[in-house]
Length: 305
Image 1: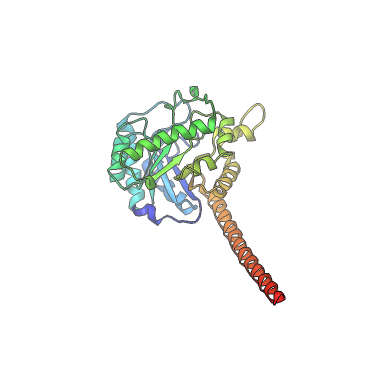
Image 2: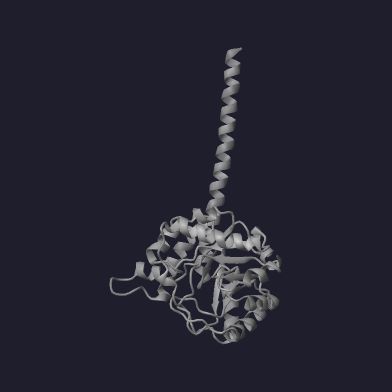
């Protein structure tokens, strides 16, 4: 799978975000110019991101869709330039045509927040390549998605609906090992529901696929950190984002998608080091216990003689 195979292993990965849009909730308009977007993507890698997710269509709650030509014009120059610079690029799109053109331009991963539901051809296009695909739990486009937050049992229902999306991808010929799943924080979910999902990450890692979590700077963090009257501003949610990254890394999540990679890059390395130390201690303890049992067994045999 090319550049994807060269990504670090043994720890949670950090996916940096390049929104080539005028209306994304966090940084809309900052990287709309292609040259600025490319420079920002390089900066993200230098700040510790392992790969970069490039998107040309905002999926914030209430956002309207852009047309295909606009999305292509925003995304392709950035994908091509970053890939040429050796960056592992994920393309954030719900359109099969954009995914195909981006893969041809050098993208290594397709990140479809609709999980293959917005465009029936998406799964077919991905199946014809060797690219990994991120399938997010999704119920409706952004303009109406917060009208669809009812669940009989949140975790069970999200897992079941996401499993349907995965099964459709596998049936279309996508190798299960190429599938990454995303529980879709903030998409057809309230703030409280986001916390419930985060408290049950094992339900998603237990499905046997790599898992991506995208919590960075989202509204539910602003609500938690803010006062009764207003949310914490978007650019003041990085510490909370890094805290979520730490929890995700410890839970065995494959990657976190973040706007500011440096704090999260530090967090995943701390968790990886501590887990390695704990594993070493556990192994040493097992060896010591085995030696102790063996020694006592020999002493008992000697006493019986």
